[in-house]
Structures are given as structure tokens and as C-alpha cells.
Length: 456
RNA sequence: GGCCGGAUGGCAGAGUGGCUAUGCAGCGGACUGCAAAUCCGCGUACAGCGGUUCGAUUCCGCUUCCGGCCUCCA
Image (cartoon, rainbow, N blue to C red; front, side, top):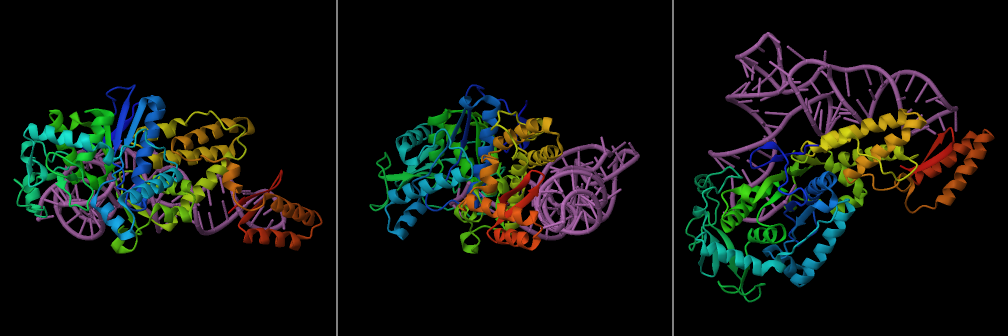
């Protein structure tokens, strides 16, 4: 089945043809580890996790390599360390661990390789030296700077001309820059800032160079897909492209990564999420409100490129949807080796159309509820397999609907007492038991085979 | 100011040059001691104005509104 992906570089959907179908390679910009991950970070992770899962499904898990970096040297980390009284190492270790926990809770697979910037300093220095040797960069006052004028295609991804950028005039004009658009590859550190020895003096890398160095060293000079948030197009990805293409002697962005993918931004109740707005929602906050799978579904409910507005209603609806799916799975006999539903697969193959895939899962659910015993199992297997491809329906229906703290034995005893009351037509007693259980969040459902319960 | 995206029924959210998803909420019905779940039925919505067309929500133009980026950003 042809996988079609939207390429930010060409602004259109393209059939995905891996450079080497035995080794499909994707690189996604990961977090700067200085604080809890927020729900916007989570959206990007979930979007590219879906891509990773679809690629694994199409090419085989052993033939896909996913690299997502950790930025563990950056000025915000230094600020966070100072503010918390912890060392930089403590801040990055703690934040990285939290990040891993959060992303796992959202059902995201860990990347195959997770390089850390501080482990690639020599490679970054080597890359900068190559750029300087080739005339694409220069040293000035302890800095190394990329010479934007030496890369003719600068601006190809973000569709902006250098002239426009200068007109924007928010560029930092340092006196040692040849051109206001030139950006930092290496900058000097003071004694109390983290730093490494380099040909330009003790210092630390600029933001963009790490991704160029890490992608090259983990995936090679040319790979298939490079992803990140829409807000990374400029300057981050534009600069990454300039560095890598110039260092590799390539002709343009496609000699670096073939397809550039960007997820849309997230707003909270209609407003841009920002700490200063007081509407900053961390993954932890969301996880306190709902299980990770609910958060994941809420994130997948809008196509990854479209803007997504985060609301309580969205979370509520995601939970209802999962309850409905799990209920339809309740009588599934075995944990299944079923096939993903064709329509679900088709939807995901069209630029990861998760909302459409989900609508097909709803149709499948209706079919299960209507199905005869004989055909039910097959449909349930298809639903379960489809859900798994989306990183959903990872629990057993029993765990999902009835798992948790409360003592199941006690609940069963109550149900038995109620059954007796009903048999004796003491309906007031029966209803009192139902209400008491309901107060604890336990919903009873009377069916032809007796009474079952679930958490509501 | 420059560049780039959006605007679909009460809400969420796909999609399509003619056959108008899907879910939530709502209404009616079946089932049921009650309830829940489930099933059946009910909503012709595509920002506005032009244009192209036999036909446009879908293509083109303009307008309005919303959002992103313009060296912190997923």
C-alpha cells in the first residue's frame, strides 16, 4: 500500500519511497530538558510516534530507525539549574526521566536512538571545522558563525528571502556578524557556564548544530524523514538544512532529508499556550485528569497538521470513545493476531489521517455490536489490531472498564445482594444498592446473562 | 510590514466537482421493574461576495475573521 506524506518542502503530498526500504530512517527534534513536558510537546511526540508505528507496520519493525534527540545543553537549562539550586546535570537527568515517563504514559514508543547533545560535542566541533574550511562559516570573537550568504538556497523550507528577513528586523545584529542573518554555531562560555574546549576557545554549541551533528552520526548524511513542530521551520530547520547541506556538499534540502514533516500547533481553550498566559498545561496535568490513552486519543482526534484546541470537552469525549471501543471488545476471546482494518490502514496511509481512521473504528464498533456471534470475533480482532496501530486499546477491556483500586469482591457481593432483592421484587433496596455503588463510580448494567459492572 | 496556514451542522471532526462521513450532545422508538449499555429512526452544515462549470462546500479571485512564524518555542 502506498504511503503518502505531506512534505513541507514541496507543500504537497508525496508518495513515500524510502531510500532503503530495509533501513527507513526518521529524525525528530526532541525536547530541551529543563522543565516538565507540556501538552504541545506531547502532540508532536504522539504525531511522530504514529508515523513510526505506521512505518514499522509497513516496512517491519526491524527496518525502521527512529532518532529523537535530547537537548541537554542550553541557556534555559542553566537558568532552571540556578533557579532550583540543582546542578545542570541534576536538572537534565531529572527532566529527562520525567519526559520518558510522560511519553510512555501516552503510549509512545521510545525512539531507537536518543542522542544527547553533550555526547556529540566533538562531532559538532568537527562539523563546524568542515564548514569553516569550506568557507561556509567563520570565526569571530570566540564565536563560530554560519555565513548565510554562502548558501544559495537559504530560505527554501520557510519560503522566506533573506531580504524579507532583514526587513523583519528582529534579527540580533552583533557587531562581529558579517551579515545580520548569520547565526551562531559556537559561542563562548563564561567560567561558570558549561563549556568545552574548541578551536574558538572554551564555549558551547549553538542550538541548530546539534541536530546536524547527531542526525549525521546516527542516520547518515541523507535520510528519509525529518520532523518537528511547525514553529521549528524557522529558524531551526532552515539553519539545520543550511549547515548539513553545506557540510555535506549537497545541492539542497533534499540531500539532507527527503521529506520534512511538521505538526500543527496547539492552543488551550482558544488561546496560545504560554507560561505568561497562565494556561500552560503539562503532560502531568493532563495525566492527572485522565488516563494516558485518553490524552493520546484527544491528541489524535485532529489531523496532525491542523491546529488543535485543547479543552476539557475534548478529553471527556476521548474517554467516552475509548469506553465505547473497549465495551465492544469485551467478549473478545483471545488477545488477537487480527489484521488492521483496511479502511483504517488506508486512512493512515494518507498522510496519517488519524481522525478518519478513528471514524472507521467507530463503524467497526457499530458492526461488532450488531454482529452475530459467528462474525463478532473477527471484527473485534480487527478493531483491536487497528487500535494498536494507533497506539490505543493497549489495555484489556476488563482492566480498562473495571481496573483500579476498589475491591472487586466487595462489588460482586453487593451485586449478589441486589440480585436477591430484585428477585424478591424489593426494588427500592435494589436501587439503593445501585445508587451506593454509583456514588463510588461503579455503574451496573443488567444484561441477559446477569449483571456486569464498570467504572463510569 | 513580510511569509504561511485556516474558516464545515449545537460541539468535535473527515471528505468530495454531482451520490453530502464519523462521533458527542439532542429528539423519537425498541429493549428494560428502573437504569445503563446496545440497536433503529430523525439534523441537507460547508464564512461572505464574485468567477469558471450543465452543476461548487469542493477549483479560481477578492473581502472579512482566526491562527502560526519572522533568530526562546513542539
